[in-house]
Length: 215
Image (cartoon, rainbow, N blue to C red; front, side, top):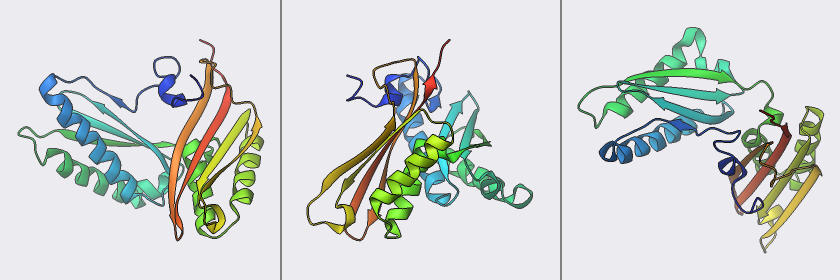
């Protein structure tokens, strides 16, 4: 079971939280859900070079709070907060476009101290190297080595697609240390990243084991 499901979704309510935290009536639920998707898509498209790992959204009756988790907070905030103010204004327009009563939008920036312990950012880094024609094996081993040096207890990386421009798609994986997917107290970060290359899309899966969370 632990090998098949998403390790983060499998642990929600145990040692992981949802990216969206709010309650809604039956009539509002669909609108809120689609709004969350639009907000995340907008931020990921606008901040492609800011090393954004995830976007979390919390809703109250008359407000929405958006937290942007990034390894480059200065790039998101901008000089004297100019960039984040633009983002807040654009999100306000996006959210209130189809609403009768306007909602207040608040945007916070959460800094990721070490991007080598974040599965999403490792996948982005491997994808960037593959697009620059670096050997996928070298990119995977480089990422694993850096993650282990920075405190990870186990790392597994899997790349799938036309690796190295091969005619037939295949899957390659490398692992170092432990990644106990069946152990629910294990703090495991997982993310799938896709990178578009001249010979097709490469899928990059990253699992990082950071130790056990004992409550």
